[in-house]
Length: 431
Image (cartoon, rainbow, N blue to C red; front, side):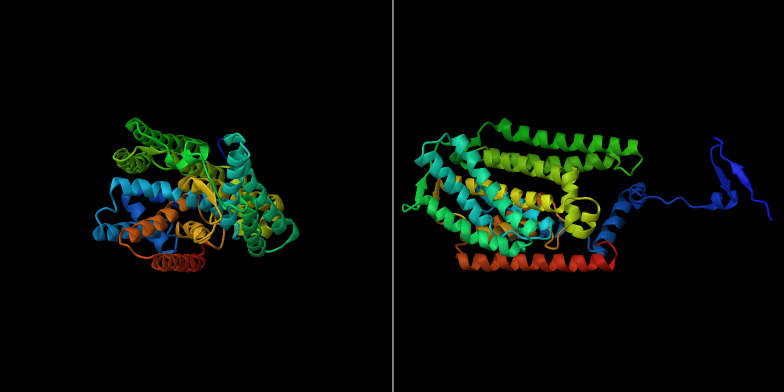
């Protein structure tokens, strides 16, 4: 029997067999470390690799938004004026709120067709309680939002517990909640809101002091830098790949330029809109929940594979119900912002193109229809594209039918890109 060459480690706790082979072994290095060691060239190579593998991220929508703004600016110089951009930012919040809820549902690989009607119900409930019944507006506001939460939870129950397809459940919800809204509003059909009330102030209030917009830009920029910096420290302590400080600084500078540019635009008009502040807060909160909490990881896991999630011990039913409840909650919030914009609740609330625009905003922004990929920031990018198209065509005097056709074309292009990207990622072994 041949002897085995054994060499003790310095600690004496472990024994290495065949030390020559061990010495020649190559340690596996995380590719992200190699990218960062190469500096700028490494990031260029990584970018090319992602493009070849179909990992496009938000690149298509950002490029599309730049092209849209360039076209409309060339057609009408008023498009990029401070007043028009400020009005666009306020107008997009209602649809954007609903789209945030849709993002959550799409992450599961499902759809919610009821959000438009639920948003109308929230506005109607608030108007009846606060105006007709004389209830405290804050209490009426909370009850209106909870109405949306309850509606979403009901949809989630039938989907997750009973097993009815989400498409069918929410289609029924679309019809039911629309009828419920008409019943709540009564024969008059329209209830005007107090112009100085809580809901009316959501879209009409502006922080006129220039320090408000600049202060928000500072907070957002500093918050990003500190979060990224301490996250890096935590990752370094855990021995996992982390970004170099130079990269964090570069990203922070880009964010600062964008944030202060937006602040300058707002201050050239009426000031910082309250609606925008609330929307940014919602995006930050929901992004944190999805990316930094166990609950958020469960949502992504379900979007990847329901069976694998179940075997991993995730309560699939509870997560599904909660996601639809979240969608209902944001639909209600969006409905209140829309009611605020017209200072009334009427029978047309939740109808028209609201549902399609909300879903389109989530998808155009980069959330996958196939589940498991997306961020709530996609709602911001998507709704910004849609509102830009609407305002740009309105400035040109283009009729609504053409607006619908163009928006539909943009949505189709986005879905095609999503499908092709997914197929490319599967080919590259990244899906």
